[in-house]
Amino acid sequence: MDTLKLAALLFPDVTKTPEDMEALFPERDLPKGAVVSRAAPSPTGFVHLGNLVQGLTSERMSHQSGGILFLRVEDTDAKREIPGAVETLIKALRHYDIEFDEGATVDGDHGLYGPYRQSQRKDIYHIYAKKLVLEGLAYPCFCTEEDLANMRDEQEAEKANFGYFGKWALWRDRSIEDIEEKLSSGIPWVLRFRSTGSLENKIKFTDLIKGDLELTENDIDHVLLKSDGIPTYHFAHAVDDHLMRTTHVVRGDEWLPSLPLHIQLFKALGFRLPKYVHIGPLMKMDGNSKRKLSKRKDPELALTYYKAEGYPVESIYEYILTILNSNFEDWRRANPALPAADFKFSYKKMNPAGSLFDVMKLRDVSKDVISRMDAKKVYTDVLSWALEFDLEFASCLSKYEDTSIAAFSIGRGGKKPRKDFAVWKEVKEYMGFFFDELFTIEDSYGDEFSKDDIKAALSMFLDTYCPEDDRTVWFDKVKAVADSLGFASDMKLYRDNPEAFKGSVADISMFLRVAVTGKINSPDMYDVMQILGHERVETRINNMISSL
Ligand code: GLU
Image (cartoon, rainbow, N blue to C red; front, side, top):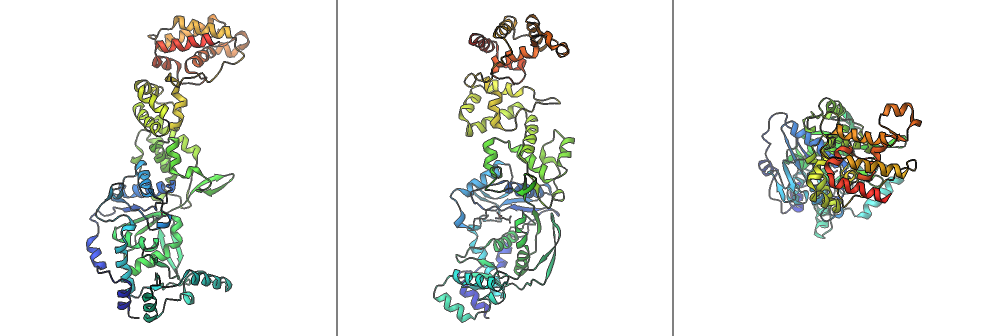
């Protein structure tokens, strides 16, 4: 075969060479051991936890080693692309604080190794496609859909393996005349790899997460360029990760079956093979068994779910570290105050079989994370969530900034901070009563209490209430109300002999709580009253008295 002629026929416009590309995209000048890695998502319109797990793993590996992380958008599948999906993808990764040093951004590409969108790299792929043709390692195939369907039918009938190989590879050894004839009639073609692999041969390979693997060689002549000249994932992966000087390919283990082809391609192209880090899937418990999280069944796979619920970015970050690295929780217990980014992440601590995802556990982690934030930060984050998802709440938060921050300060700081909410969506329920616009009486007094006692307790409290009282004086006054109405002010006495009393001081507090907050459960009453101020406390208690 005259490959020179074939290459000229197939790629008449390609004038640049692989050497030109090597010069344009030289080896990166980085210290030894620095990891260059990337996130390479496809803009399908659905950004999911897997993207975050992949992004975070590669981000930690790159940045902890003093290396580089870049974002490459794998937008070669125009059919699947939804308008705006690239921007959605970039913004979602940005929202979760995955910091890219280079790559695609909403304002275009940044960095010297671009373009970072595969749809803009067609010319580059063709340089390498031409090289493979010149070396006899790739050839055009003019099979129609129908030819390929027939091939599959025959393979099925013969119980042969599926795929374009051996005697089924109709265009593998066709003459240049046949090819020229098709080309001149304008018949569409794809470029196929000329595989020299055999199912008889095994390759030994070490994946950084999966460990030592024995893979079967690939014997299929896979498509490298589709009929529109756009590369398949396999070809683009080899060309891009070589030219962008990726040292570590971090990706989902659904790509493991394609690895033998990728190893062949790197070799055929004369590229050094990067290291591979194949991440196991995210799973959840379904009854007693584990299964992969599914786009169809599990809304919690989508990142939009976490944003709408109002999970702080820090909580998601912390939880992902928890499920990816088995030693993260111990580290956190030993270092409660350090930022999660100080943790020494290691791919060695990742479970090759994947990670178990559990929303309840995420909630616990999130409560911890929020309990460590200061009130101002909580305020800012809740407000920005509310501006997107609950405008009524947002307008109260903005109108009463000081009250809100004071409310978020209750029980914050100290050794045992309160853990009242896991997501911003729950905050309104927790503290909306501070705002007159949102205050309503939600809970009612139980039938076991007489209205007269409740009214009496409320008005006696008001008679003596003085906002300048400290916590102890305030509580003594509540106890005094209890005593004078036949409720126990001493909880021990009450527990020993409950029949002797109408109730206890806890019930008196509850009467106040429902009047002032509308609820049976609320943050500390003393603090709440301090923040609401004398006038509001008085109005709310009086309103309750007159409604009974
Ligand atoms: N575009 C591929 C995906 O979204 C990327 C895999 C890779 O990281 O190489 O699955």
